[in-house]
Amino acid sequence: MALTRKMLKAMGIEEEKIDQIIDAHTETVDALKSERDRFKEDAEKLPSVQKELNDLKAATEGGDSLKVKYDAIKDEFDKYKKDVELKETRGKKETAYRALLKEAGVSEKRLDAVLKVTNLDKLKLDKDGNFEDADNLKKGIKEEWADFIVTTGTVGANPATPPAGGKVSKTKDEIMAIKDTAERQKAIAENHELFGF
View 1: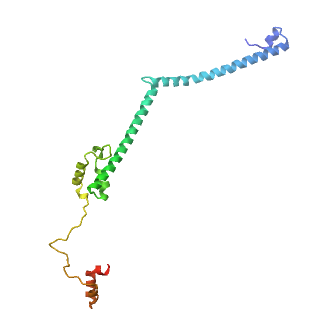
View 2: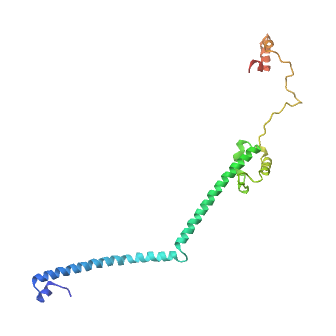
View 3: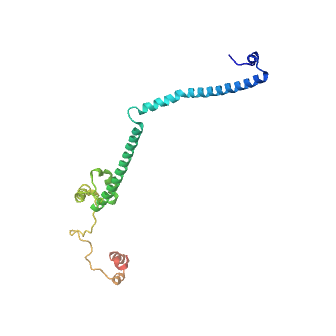
């Protein structure tokens, strides 16, 4: 049953009191409507909150989700750390092997080619950054890469075909005294050191 002015007049309440009662009743009803609307909004959110709760429960079943995340991140970090160490070790091995190739006499032009085809993973470094058993390794390099080893040195003339010369060289004045131009130029060419070229 609704509270109306008609009903209040039938009860014999004065007109002034009726207005006060209606105002108080309206305030109460408005407050209840506002509270009802708030509860209704909360009730509408309930399914999404319940779904989130169910998802969290499902994620934590079979183990602690934070531990799983921690283990995954730790594994990823350990892998990264190992990769960095491998690259660092590989760089040290390349530097040491390059120096060993130079010592063995391998041509500078061929160092990169030799490094590309060499399996450095099998080789081990000591604490000083040198290869273990470097002497045998150097010997193996000299045998395996002999075609790339540059040899330099002074080689004498072949005794079977001695250099042309053997003539007694002339002095600068004797050469300049030659009247025939072609013969004088030939003598200058043969004794060019006398003329500074």
